[in-house]
Amino acid sequence: MERLTTIGIRAAYLLFIIVFSFTATDCSDKCEETNYFVYYEPVYATSAEIKAAVKLEAPKQMSQLGRIYYKDGYLFINEAGEGIHIIDNRNPASPIQKSFLNIPGNFDLAIRGNTLYADSYVDLVAFDITDINAVKEVNRIERLFNNYTALGLMVSSDKGILTEWKKVESVHVQTTECNTIYQTWGGIFYQSGIAMSSDRAAFLSTKAAIAPGGSQTGIGGSMARFTINGNYLYGLDGGNLDIVEVTEQTSPIARNEIPLMWDVETLFPYRDKLFVGSRTGMWILDLQAPAQPVVLSQYSHLRSCDPVVVEDNYAYVTLRSGTECEGFTNQLEVIDITDLKNPNLLKVYPMTNPHGLGIDQGTLFICDGEDGLKAYDAKDVMKISDNLLAHYKNIKAIDVIPYQQVAMVIAENGIYQYDYSDIKNIKLLSQMPIVNH
Amino acid sequence: MLVWSGDLLAQSPVNESLRAKKVEYFFQIQSGALVGCNSCGDGKQVSFTSSFSNGVKIGRKLRVGAGFGFDSYFNWNLLPVFGMASWDLIGKKNVLFVDLSFGNAIAGWRPEAIDEYGYTDSRYGNMYGYSIGYRIKYEQMRIAIGVGQKTQFVTSYYEYPTYYWRNNNYVMGEPGRKEIKNEINRLAVWLSIGWK
Image (cartoon, rainbow over all chains, first blue to last red; front, side):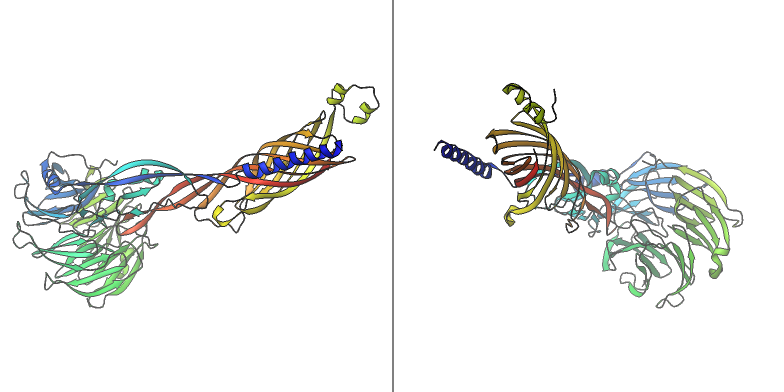
């Protein structure tokens, strides 16, 4: 009897502990999720604040150069997003920085007569440069570039003008259901900003982020997004072409806006035609009716960045690869445009990583990235590679404007000017340093 | 003083306190099921657990030892090493006992079928468990059944592509990062067989 009691007590004890174990045991998982990211919030300014900042200032250090324009002995060089350096270049061997025209949100420019046209975020601003020492704003077309986006957000909105991205670092910790997957991809959050990893954020240039599409260093030549032909200014606005009449120089009038292609990048006028470089090809527009351009043809190529210049019956297009350009092609293409409605690829020359290019009376300059600046005699378009005139390997050339025997070159570390009056003896005239941040 | 076998003591005129300090080697092989849920809305999951442990029996009630095992948690298969201790509660021949274990997963892998977006790596952490069991003695052999709790920590790392908008295109940046610390709790039901 005693033994049975002992067994009963043990069995009850065991049963109790088993039941307790089942009920007390938490057999579901717990998860704590930690996300690391940097959040960029858009900062908006009013139009009045932006206008108030436009003024002529003392010369300042050049650092992140954009477009370059040459007019009557003066160089006008864009400081990306900030304004324009004005340089007295009447003696190319000894250029002198005269002043800095502060224009918030400026990335491009063009000049007709004594009027300089520049973008300021979404506005087109006209400046009177008759007196180079007293440049002043004379007119403005507000919100002309209404397709302008930055990191996916419209620059112009009800909130004002998007001028800056404010960095907010964040680590987010939360307890989650273990089967819930939160994806911290740094996609675009259109209403509130953009999230990205801390690593990525370290390399984000908020200045570049606010630049309009296709913005790299350019010239009033092969990589420009503004250009003037006759009495009309043509500007790329997203995938559209804005057409502004500048017959009355100080009173620009927006005349038309026509859709082209989302990936258009550069404009190059030649005679009464406009050559538009896009990542997938080259468009040729007829400007006989300047406010109503007509697409004559489109020449397609591999996906790549492709500035274009034209001389006589040939268009010269450089294709380059790279993060932004996506493609894998680095070459110079010569296209026969004798029949503008049927452009025909004539010859392809391999290059290293060609950026901007320029041509003047058969002398072709190519900025070949890490491989420097190359000058060719291109009179025989079928033998360009056989006629290398000069090769400057020590500069990372980005764009060039050859004009009146002087080639003005923007490179990563400065502005170089070369005298090519004797094409067999091209000489360096001067160098202006750039402070790279 | 360590005495390898109880036979020597059995032939000696020892008192009860000396018998209590007798130390004997033991080992056991354990196998069972882990019951719990990662996604509890989908119901309980049952996975496999096994281990081999060995150590010493100190006196009549205490066992301490160390071992290694294999635990499956569906998303991870782990190889823990651990130390353990058990204490006999009731009984002399057949006993009711509790045991504790604490260790660390020294290696692990994910089943190939698990293809989770962004997953890059896992770091396998500590484990601990406690259970209650009933051990039956048959000469030198011991057979036991038990039930308890096992907790394992695993941290998983994820990377997701980051894009930013530039020049009318999404450009890929450095990936965003995420880590999830998993505390995996399971009810463990097991059967063991061993020596001593």
